[in-house]
Image (cartoon, rainbow, N blue to C red; front, side, top):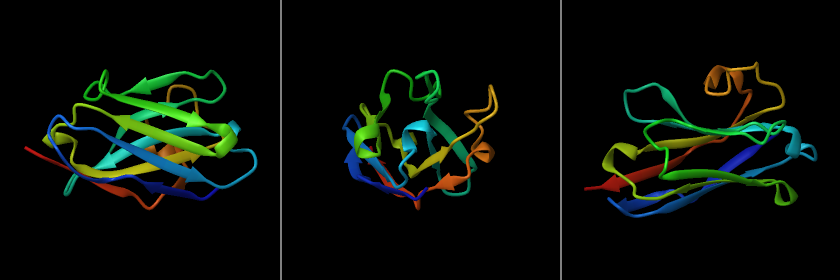
Length: 125
């Protein structure tokens, strides 16, 4: 599976962006997908994820109520709608996918084998 993110950019605080992740592969609908972000000098942090088998969505507390993960399996696309952006949301955002993730580990970046190249999101105050 190859993943390519797009949609990042510079936005003022309170604004919105929608990140897109285009995936290759005919069985993408059976992949768990996640969004992670990494700010300079920090570790790669979990943002949101979707487990294909249950349809469940999970969000980090810092983005809950502001960000929404969604997917369009017919188009092999994953999205991250980001609203009410804050300066602390500034980071490189990565899309990730894997066909098998251990129970309870969907927030763990080490569980994902496939990653995009990342897209920069900068939120100005």
